[in-house]
Image 1 (cartoon, protein in one colour):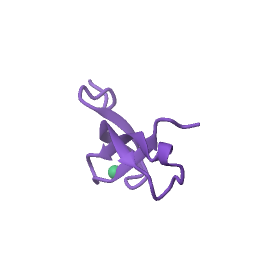
Image 2: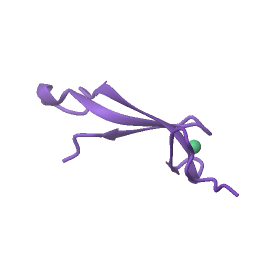
Image 3: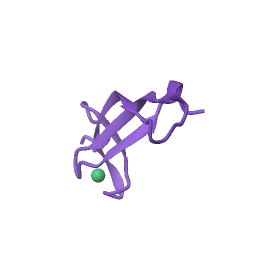
Image 4: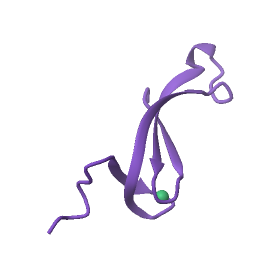
Length: 66
Ligand SMILES: [Zn+2]
């Protein structure tokens, strides 16, 4: 009997909308955050973007977290 976890494609992550672990599509995108950062050199940052396959909500996580 195979478990639900260990999906061969994609990752399972906690989804705040679904309230449980769901399969996610994960990618890396360069997002402009000029409205957030005042310093121009921090205006574009790589973000890890995961999209819930169940409800479609996107979660962006800044990769240069400090
Ligand atoms: Zn979800």
